[in-house]
Length: 360
Length: 122
Ligand SMILES: [Zn+2]
Image 1: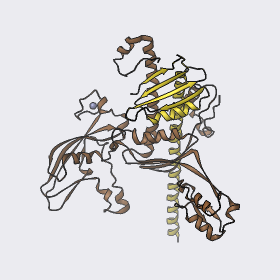
Image 2: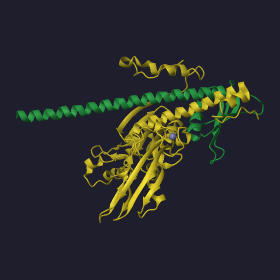
Image 3: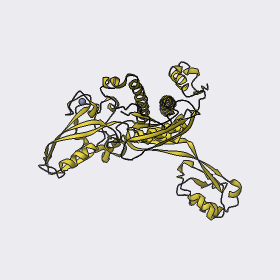
Image 4: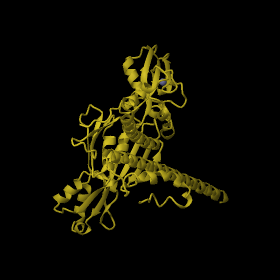
């Protein structure tokens, strides 16, 4: 059996094979040959709320599964229940409740928390440590100046779950940075007040976009650009410039010294094919060949701030694993059903809704 | 929680089955299709979502001999191994990136103080 995980895991990491051992065992499942490719990862840029990385040697379906999970199935916390005590602002209760829901909350705890509908420790009224976090807001305007009610006015019952704070923006752009003032909920004039209790719950983007940790998750294929140098030399300098300028993004450049067309930024190419059409129109088809490498992906992940961008990807992997486990386990329980018949089904109390095998 | 239901074919031949996965979509359907397609024991695999408002994926699997359900189980295991691998790789890549960035910041700090030192001597 082929077992080349990675040549780099040797030397100082020699003690590591611990976490490689399961692969050796698992790979045996699918026949004698190892036909699954094992991807490589390289980080290009890493910030708290942004990551750009390369995922190589895998298939679109795998990359796309991870992308879809990051957008729609990585859980976060968001306000889901609002009890209005007093609202004399210009916005109605539902409007404010909706705006509260869209405020991103720090959600490091979300992965280990329970979904409110699956929680058996409470009746969903919000006073439950496993599935709910309570927020209070109490603001009244007592001056002639308009008062902004922002996410900073939300008082959390859990110091680890607070509205995403972008006040670092202050350091860069001074006290006027709008982000530094928190997320605006409503504005109050003299005498108006807003008093409410809000419950944040765990959820996923598939149920409501407010629970999505993703601002953007995208991947692109890496373009491979080959210029036909011989054909390119048949162009005059003017023609070269005209051709280079026909690309909507800055992919090519005419080198001022050598007067040759060079690729300056292959990844800026958006597969718009304008450059190919231009070459055809100039009577020079085949001037450039552009191939998209469909086994290499450049991922861009932007977080709302609810979860660190790098953690979003790790959580996505864990969720994909849970999904696979669920399918596998439903098989096993199904087999137990075949063995013990209806009794086994009743004994489980119908935890998983399974139907025994049907032959059509 | 997803559940799986297996439908055999008309000939009662268990090398060909349609698996009906509930509460799943293209995320899992397409990825499983890819993994199964790579398996040399698979003669045919395809998936469909019969209706967009029903959370269900039907996965059709025909093998060259082994039981379809065994091949699917192996595919699940393979994908889990793939997952574990990507996780390890990603965490290591993040660690390496942070280490390199940390070094760079440190070297900037050193050269900064070095410059300061030079100024004092002058
Ligand atoms: Zn609860």
